[in-house]
Length: 568
Image (cartoon, rainbow, N blue to C red):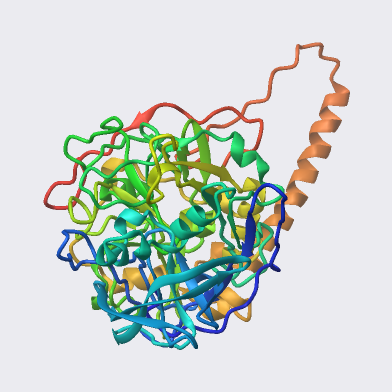
């Protein structure tokens, strides 16, 4: 659900339709739209529990900034075309603007959010999703909205399990089933799976990216060139222990590799989990969630170790951060490489998806952690479900994901297999590194000399932040665009200084080479050559290229924070 002005959509790929005499399957373009930037940054979360003990329908975290994307597909409902956001975190369909042909059931429904709510009458109308035709599809026709844009011709389509459908519960029959359940039940030759490939264009950078992928969604088919996804491990979709069903899975044991190449020791926050080990995090996969969320100790182990990083508890105390809380401000030019592990496979995250640029309205740009600590209203809240974190857009943009509904489809018999996920990494490590260098460093790669990460014992959450220290982390709009350099920028980061040093270094190297070569020619030594000495790296580990050795299996353990915010 979009909270803010929905801008006009631009296509990332043309519609592709695959026909088979035996299997009905379709591929759809996913359209990416930048969210509105005409309001302050806001972070909205579901927090109202409904009468069934679960949160209101939907799962979108929305913040209004020109750098954020939302993902949509086109449908035709009751003869009217709509652009609807895709959301694997919810199960129902709602739209703004009445279709040409629709039937009012006189049943009402409301979907509440931490910031904003929609309500109206449940209607039915014929739905066309490309060639799929679903007669009398139940949906919510929004009549009233609070703090939600009511742009006509927009809406949201949920692709979550039908068990979480508010409309299905209201109907109390299969007539209220969500869109995908209706499609799968009407088209018995269509495999019960969907796949997503989210575009990253414009979402994380103002410069053209080398690592570009088109946005696409499929029903019962695989995107060409990504067929290897069927060879990936089948990860079980968890049945929620608290009854709030979403697409949930298990990370591997200590399944997050930190920026220094070492595994972060993890521990689930769920009491007596039914599935998995204590060191496996339960995560929800959600295409409608902008900022992924992980336990606070994991976030601190990633962002808190960056030199000069600052933790802010209440963003409203600072210009440009209204609505944000419990986040880290980090240097925009600091490259972070983090990897997630599922089924023994590594899923690296683009460095540009690790931090998010926020303009403060005064010409300065700050960077905060894209992966944030799990919200207080989610962590340990049984109404939301048994989960430790949410892997939203910033994670999913780095993967191609298949969700097999299995027996989660309403009406499935016992012969249908259990639901599962398959995830394929789409990342070219060299390309995403170059994208970061181009976007954040003006094309000059100085990441090899960036300061080493702090030891976890030195991570501090300060109670109050010196605003002068905040200013030191700012990157000006002009320096970002290359028009002029910020006078406050340290001299060692300025382009002219780097070029001068590089030229001088090259000249010095040439002189040394000549001297050494001359000396060696004069020597007749037959001393056995020794293997070159490689100096040890600091606590920073860049993404490894194909063919390199594995990451260290040695996990480090973040110690609990004391009241003063310092680890000991």
